[in-house]
Length: 288
Ligand code: BQF
Image 1 (tube, rainbow, N blue to C red):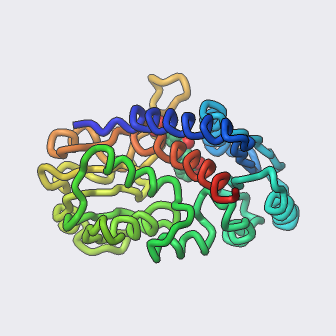
Image 2 (cartoon, rainbow, N blue to C red; image 1 turned 30 degrees about the vertical axis):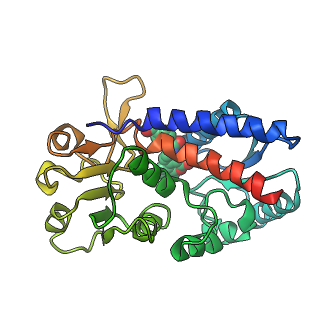
């Protein structure tokens, strides 16, 4: 069975839009997200456009501040500090990756944690680890929400996460481990021995390694739930753009053994955007 992330994300956006309307009807100004885009990476620009469009759909204000690829770290840090003190700004999002002259971690650490709607600030990462309130990174939050809304039982199950990134692997590990969620979690990466054997033991597979079609049918236990976080471009001359997007899972073959599986596109991606909007609305409410 397909887990339709596009549909579920659309339902969540409609809930957020209703809550935002309610918030504004109580006399508050609309939530506001400042998006910072540095450089001219086409994928980043496209993600940022998608985020701005989603904000608009939900009644959340947003502007994209587009900076030249030659922007210095100091210039970016100055902008962040201005946005931190601007009382009209509820959320700050710096689109990653940043150009090589800028230290991502330094910039993320400069964002006021109460405005860090991406949930990448060390304080917010720490709160996720401790199971305390804070901002949860959008993709891991989206994965958990997909599992919840698809009725996937997690408690006591073996979850295997492929990939140990700070943005997906490590935070989703902590969310799956949370009290009340109670998965038994294993993280695999490029140095994992007998990786296919480890993955075959999984009731829930979270694939976030960034390699097209990495998870093959023989690695998937019949009935497992498969969440595909990968977004890989592969050449496709039959497409106008010359490429198509595929996940980290060999969907066409795995679909017949999985009990539930997310497609790419239209799986986790739209949920990432929905969770960003959720965090932005929460940032506005928490401030008040
Ligand atoms: C879909 C991202 C890698 C590196 C930096 C919808 C998105 C993607 C796919 C999207 C991503 C990936 C984002 C779909 C934001 C997810 O329909 O399948 C939405 O916009 N994403 C990002 O901002 O930075 C990234 C992946």
